[in-house]
Image 1: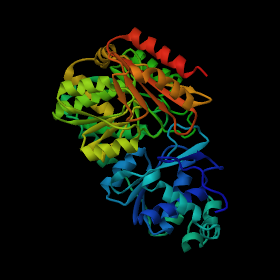
Image 2 (image 1 turned 180 degrees about the vertical axis):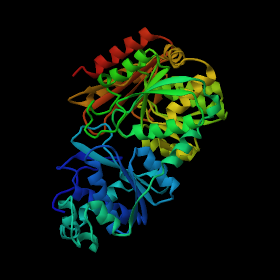
Image 3 (image 1 turned 90 degrees about the vertical axis):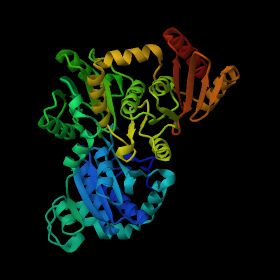
Image 4 (image 1 turned 45 degrees about the vertical axis):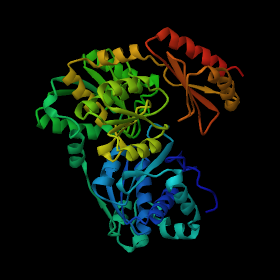
Amino acid sequence: MANPITCFKAYDIRGELNSQLTEEVAYRIGYAFAAELDAKTVVVGSDVRLTSTPLKLALSAGLIDAGAKVTDIGMAGTEEIYFATKHLGVDGGIEVTASHNPINYNGMKLVKAGSIPISGDTGLNAIKERAEELSDKFVNGRSAHYFNNETVDADAFFNGKAHTRKDLLSNSGQYEESSCMNEYVEHMLSYVNLNNFTPLKIVVNAGNGSAGPALDAIEKAMHDKNVPIEFIKVHHNADGTFPNGIPNPLLPENRADTADAVKASGADFGIAWDGDFDRCFLFDADGEFIEGYYIVGLLAEAFIEKSTDSKIIYDPRVYWNTEDIVANAGGKPIKSKTGHAFIKERMRKEDAVYGGEMSAHHYFRDFAYCDSGMIPWLLIAELVCVKKQTLASMVKERIKAFPSSGEINSKLKDADAALERVTSKYQPLASVIDTTDGLGLEFGTWRFNLRKSNTEPVIRLNVESKGDIPLMEEKTKEVLALIRAE
């Protein structure tokens, strides 16, 4: 290939359309994926973006040319690919998605058999190299007709009569469309006891992304079993033009529609998802956004109530609240480096039932150790019913006990120099030094974690204290001032 492929990242594929990620690149990735994994069966899916289906079909063409049979589950969230990969027992799975990235981007998330993640050092770099090594002559000769024509009437590509790109794939005998939605819903509902549910009103905001159809299927199954839940739906219909903006509830400016709907409807709580719904974000009955950190503690408690001695994995940015909940409930807290590949690897090693990150990624042993945006709210809803407490009361109690700053990013000219300034001042005073991920220092009643970005000159700070909000705020300002003292 004349130019390198630049859309490969550390854990997935993401790139700007037409420049970094094209249908030709998607074809190359599909061919390289099947060749590198020796994959004979692969499941594919795509989010709602208008470019996702064409990229998925080009990807499928590459997979087929490399000898794989492709099962296309259609428009789906990333976790539906995780589920289908394990449920169908196939050799790999690929979701075409750009999640919360801008509209002019797209990407892919890849897993091997058993929904084990593929990252840079576990196969992604090798797939990139294979994709680049494919000769232009091969790619162009095999697929030019397919890529350049939306409507086809020729014997090209798979040597069969065809009128659309999907017809071309289907005529290969190596492509089929299927659905695992019923089995997926059944698995989602297996995490809760539906008899525990009392009447709830929940606002759900799919952000016009992929979550809507999955939520509808879960709603129907719950109503068929007479579960007394009412859903208030906001921006529910899947729409690849994203008329209400790219769904990314992590950004404060994207939370108002959910918060307002919760308050207007008198709902018990609210849920919002990102585009491929592998993360969910929760709002209490007052419309207040709940930091993901505190949801980790609640989900840990939910699992330990079902099975004592449960092992819980958590990331090292903020953890006092999680450790306190897990220890008091009789579970075993285990710290892991931040990032889905590290969390999943540690969960497999420990056979942990649940792992959570403050970024709203939640991982489950019985879900192939993968992250899900549907399982968390189901567990929280059950916990609200069982404890007969509001979500707000449960969370506010924990925030008061362990207040945190939330993650604060500082873009700097010299991130290394900033890290050295903070280390020199604070490390000699620390009672505990933790280097699991970045620099973590404890000082009795407060602590902080400082991490450098791997891709840009940014420092990420998290501060927490034990029951002292003014102290947490004071120390946050103090450490930030030193970080930014360039």
